[in-house]
Length: 349
Image 1 (cartoon, rainbow, N blue to C red):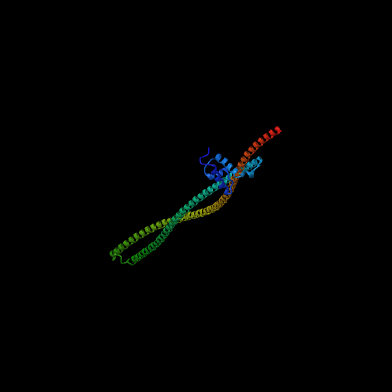
Image 2 (image 1 turned 90 degrees about the vertical axis):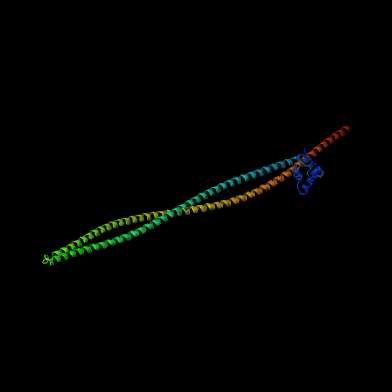
């Protein structure tokens, strides 16, 4: 059923407007121009308009073979266009998926290299902090070693001084003994008279000898303590030297590790730059593919427009063929009537 309001006048007016735009009036274009109506209603009205405006005179005598050829040509063009569009779309989707995978792999590789670089930076920072601590420990050990060496030198100096004091005390003791013996020899004759004085002097000398012996014992004990302290200081100095050598060895090992880490970092940065360059190439390839897709889209649009034009022309041709078929039927009917009349005339003659 036709929609209310669609009349022959409306179809004629729309067809004239389409023709003024230098386009072929078709059922779809008339329906688009009107914005309403069904094809079954518009088609006979449009055919009537063409008949009234003499459109059939240009296509009179159009054979059916030509109509079939146009139909087959239209189908082949449509199939080729659909096949090209589907093929271009599949190629673009495959290329787009491949580029996405490559981009995802590149992003994953960049993320891994970034994480590894961060780990190397953290490891270098930690090693640097450990090296700083070891440097401070080594400096403290050097200071302690210097202090111990200074104390050892002082102890050696004190030991030498004590040795000199002991030597002086021994020499003084020998001198006193020699003096005492000489005094005994000189006072042998006066011993009886000076016994009391001798006893006092002898007691004083004995007390002085005991004091000197006590001082000598203390000096020897102090010298022994100083020797023990010197030995302990020497052992401490040897231990500090050994620790210093161990720290230097560890420091050299850490420096070698840092050099290796720096080398690995340089290699990682080189790989990162290579991946970045590859990513840029992928981006360029993607841009080229995008341009190619735009060209394909343009070609598809051109083919689609050509297809629409071909469809319109085919529709026009079909309408003309339908109109010619109707006219052919009318002509055949008239021919049959004329033949019948001719036969009647022949019979009457």
